[in-house]
Length: 100
Length: 502
Image (cartoon, rainbow over all chains, first blue to last red):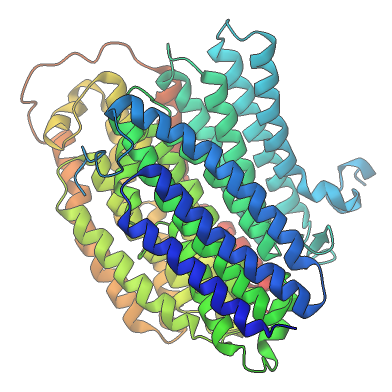
């Protein structure tokens, strides 16, 4: 059996790739994909430790996370669509009419 | 002898969720009404159904609170669905708060939405968001906390971007969504780490596991707790996930801004109080009390200083709402274990008072937007001569937010700061008091503009939006009446908070 620490390192690595994507990409769709990576990192942990602890709580919650990620993308794509209609671009830095 | 039907403690246990169910059913009903007759927009029917649903939820929560459902006076907390949901005094207190704010905002939206498309969707989304918030207050498991938080967040993103041809609204929706998606991913990863260290998602089990021996997983649990705190920081608009708030509140339709900055923020605190107090023991992995002390001080200072430099009223209110998140964080920052119920309860009472005064302030901004008055302090000059009633209400909100004596906001802040002093954190109270003094500067600028300054140009206000006016006046009445009525409120809040302290 693979020791559980390996899963933690893998999940942390996937999470960090997601964070890197968030910080460097300007395209809203790539931003969404990076968030998906971060959520999937959480899923790796949940499933691996569900096996480690011998209960199905983690696996079940993993399914919940996936469903919610899909719902989030559905709302997100809608917002990105109206962003495109208003700004003629999906670059998140374009939408800066209000000062930070 | 009352008839048996009217005694809340004799109903089946699932009925303890009635406030949540009332909100959810109302949301669905609005969609049904819309699908029966999609082309005929009947704002009165839609707003009426929404208001009745929110008031029903408020009535149920109030009835349960007074009947002692889930409280020590009957059989203690009611847990449902394998302990994943819990109904106790704190749940009902927050549900009453969400239902009141929802009712106010739905009534106010009647005038704000006049002549716009997709009204049924607007009200339905608002009721669904309120359902999510009511469920957040009932979460007894990290899984429920996450799902309920998303149920509250997803409709809110759509509501902020509701004016889809308005670039400000779309931009606000985008920023709110991006930060929200990021923070929910951080929250989910934090939950997965806590699960990795403890093997459970139920808060009492997590508490037990964290208080015991973690066999080398202490660091994992600590990082997990920090990330969970990050998820709550987004929902409550506190540092470090606060920077969406000014944009989202400024760009969103004003009733939505009021809804988000009061109800949504309180929902974040409801679940944060429950998760940290009942889920994470003080000595587990990370000193979260210290974390919240830092966050509280930074949040209130940043919010108040930024608010003082604003030129636009709505944006000032957004930063002031960040400042108030800092005050409410004192509930966790001065938490000392067994005796922590007092300051926690004071924080809950502050959130209730804040719910009325802040929603009212944003609804006044909605009124100004309806009249086409500008957005800056200068544009508000001389408004009192045209709309004296609304201006009196706005002055009440401003002085109450600043914490001046004859209004509800004074007592709630007083109890909050006294709670911090009693817990031995006098410096937290001192920072809060200094910030309150500073806040008086920018709140009084609004009052000065309304009453003392002369209008720069002649303007006509046009029609009087009755529903919006009624909502503003009612919020002002509630803010004033919470001064004599503060005794029962603080008692309920503190006993509810004391009941959850393990």
